[in-house]
Length: 424
Image (cartoon, rainbow, N blue to C red):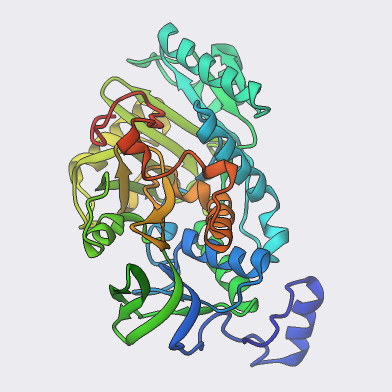
């Protein structure tokens, strides 16, 4: 059991100043790998850490080991564009993501760690009357579920986001938009660090540089995992490995309805405040979501690359496509220099919605298939997955997000595009 973690406060800062060097200590490092755990969580990203935290806090399961191949927060939780929202159409999705958004609103206080939640608003732009009908349908579904949504006409869009008003006529001009004011951004690395700190303070062991290489079974039940440091026995095992979910299926000898695709993002050099919200601009030939970070850089992303890959190497054609779309929306960006360009691996399911369910064995669980929604889902995902693991019963929020839906045809196809993760 780790020693008590001091609460962050103005008083603790004063104490640290008076105490001098050595007051602060590592927050989660130093735990030794045990031979046996009640629960082993594979993956120290947002979903794995949140699951471990809720297992310890909500269900009193303190014998939890989180095994990470590299470092805490090294994967997708540190490679995304930080957007959080709950503006989904299907009830199975918007109720879940609304639960997550509500948890984001109070997460800093809960973890005693500033995750920098910023409710700056998420604005989906409509470029035709047909698109406004679709946005109106989604907004109505949200409001019927008690979720905030506002349908804006062109004048209201320009009043809310005046940076859009100065452009010359666009090829694909703005007709209106759908606004969720409580949507916004959260600092990605702070989320990983905050959950790791809180889980460790509850007695969870976080073991970095500990790759899981296999699953050991006996009598039709999983008994533990093989790692680079030896065998670890566990009563229950949770896989939360983001873009490597398909590889877990291969490890277990089964094919999952998942493909791994790259999703790229980029950020410009810092500039003075320009964009005070999150803008989503999708036209017939491209997509860009644009926001400005707390450091001043303009963050942009777009479509998937369009082919399965694990490389995490950015592609120039995708950078060009996103940059052109962003400049078409905001010509003010044309003279900026690109500062950084990266890619993350997305585990894309065949209906675009996530999976939290048992995986082949009664005591093996999957938290994956997050497609575009992984980061924004972390708080709700951790709580729901922990409940399933601890009690054996899925809470209502995730009851429809089973692996079996792909066999029964009860798909959760938010986009209505069919089983084609590349075609958006």
